[in-house]
Image 1 (cartoon, helix red, strand yellow):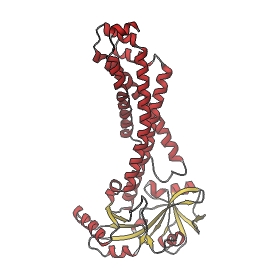
Image 2: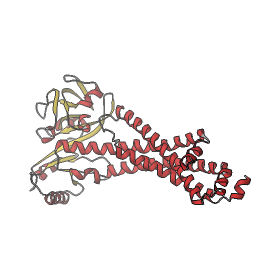
Image 3: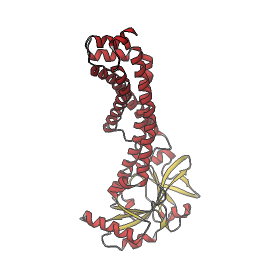
Image 4: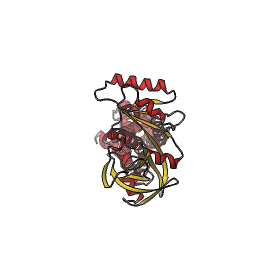
Length: 371
């Protein structure tokens, strides 16, 4: 009988117990895939949005929370006058319940600014001017809200006409409601306030010049933070908190998996004392006995990882279609995340098997044969 055959014979000795242990690992791995996939997907959605709009620097007030606070829109005018700024405009963004949708991103965009340029009309038109009480829906938002051009929509206390459906070139833009900034300020109670300043720098500006611009803005406006667009995801407190929460929650599920595998392997060692004693009597080294138990626990981890990736993928697909999530992000499940999840599962198996493997290697052939 080969070494591999001995491993799988040990696993199939108690198929129900092995199956339940694999299921425990798979639930932990599914949590990793789902939570990390959601977090990573949101980061990619934001990065895609900034690329689609063409923002070079974004200014916001993130102090004291994970959502940006509103500040006076006159800041935009002072920033626009700085050397090294080609264009600056203000945006007011809120996450609101819109009709039947429990949560949706709503943007008030400065009319005539470059933040409207990425939209490709699918149906209807854009607002005529900054004063028209009209909204433009991203194509995903239109699907969720079941709206088309010409319909009416209620946003906060305002009643608006849907004048257009657009492709915003990113998941977040396609899931958003857009209107001229003054109209959104009026209905949301944020008159004269924005929570983002979007900046474009002249073509050919060096990275050092952009860094200097960011420092100048932060010195001029204490409390505001100016960040290059390609650094928003990596430096944002909100994204860092989301990553930490996803991994910490997953860790709890993995701890349960570790305990389950360890219990299974200890029971296996106890039940197989006679078999282990025979193998030792036949000349197997104690290191080979340890390797046998570790390989069995690693194999359970591998199987749990495969099942967990499948369960996590199904969970992500279901969440992606949920009205509360659709339009916010596109969950990210790439080969990298799947490979990392399976590697974690194998690691869980190996760690769980260390103590049982050590216990098995301590058995005496004579005592084991008596069991």
